[in-house]
Length: 116
Length: 112
Image 1 (cartoon, each protein chain N blue to C red):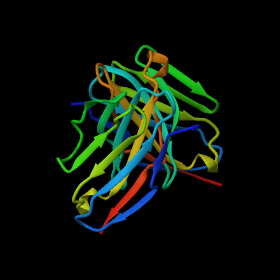
Image 2: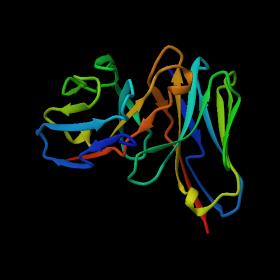
Image 3: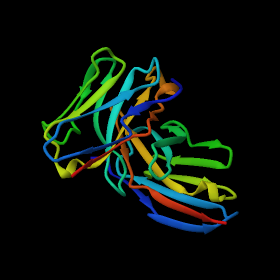
């Protein structure tokens, strides 16, 4: 597609439920990022993939958060046993990551997760 | 640890005014800095990307400058329009890393 797409756009979960958020990066983009944005705050880094390799997961807030990108394209962020503090917008971004001209990150529309 | 601060947090101006948004960062060892726009309920739209070796970038009515040594960047918006109303975020990528550290944004409202 023309840009980064994410699904679902909105997700309401009951506390304790597991959720899976999907990101389709721009075709051919090597790098993929997940960010979490709380209301009124800037996005905060969660994890980074280069192709299928998860090179940095230092931002994942707990072991309930898990991300994968098995074929180096689509990525899924999974949150197990959701808690109310997980409520946020989850943003996905991708970049070509080939040389300095191509490291611009392009963001998807985000998934707004509300945990009741 | 890199910290990014944006001031002001909110700004309201009449249409047609030129304005400056500020971004400061604590660690000058950066790879690049990117300015984004975010509309309510939407994702981030990239406005300008400045590499660490560059001093400024321009796109239409927007001009972003970078002073790496002082840890500052400014986004200049000329002849503001109501359609410019949004939250503006700056993000810094540190040398040797891939992730961006974001500021908390400046909420801009341009009054018709």
